[in-house]
Image 1 (tube, one colour):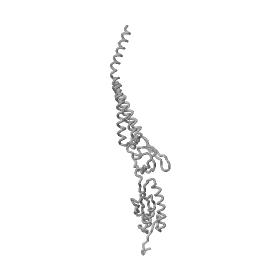
Image 2: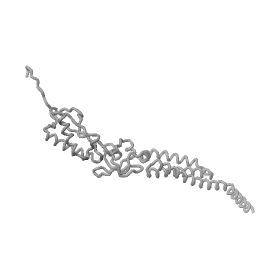
Image 3: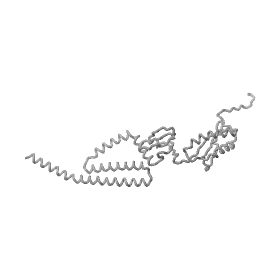
Length: 278
């Protein structure tokens, strides 16, 4: 009989606990649907705002995913607290684990943050011809942690995004018109104006060289054995700059040879003054 009485008391206590816990359970269900609706609204607001700002689709998807994860974490913690689950110890453990991971994966996190900045800031896009440091290459793929390039020698180069964010990046595709600068040296005994006329006449016949701004020849420096001129002209497509550089380096030498203008090689000229001792 005593055993039956204890069972009855335990059953009543269990029923009372369930009844007392029911409001928490119902409020948790309500919170779940509220957070679900809030996530939909936030996703739509962020997506429409970034679309109006003309942000890349890759960046929009990345930010929407991050916002979704943030809402999920906040919802899980709120619902767990509503269900009277002790989350303090869980948060402490997550904090310690996060601190350890932050030290172990700081380079990875840095590369990911740099990747997000590159996607949002858009210093280049896939298919662009860029110079990163001293590397000339075409952008093949922009990833979250790395960016893949293809050099002119068809070499695939994978560069961490953090390294790219610390380098000077030149985007030739963004500004296709470019000035080609060709160094040509002449001997000190030659006439600068005559050499200038020969070089300018040479490039005037090429329709791919822009006439506005017009080509010029300047004296760039005075070397040890030559007057260093520089032929400058503009072209419409930056991808052709090396072809023009190689072409007119050769043609410039040939044009000066035909005009009888000497292009000196490095040499040392010694003058001995006439003195009684010599």
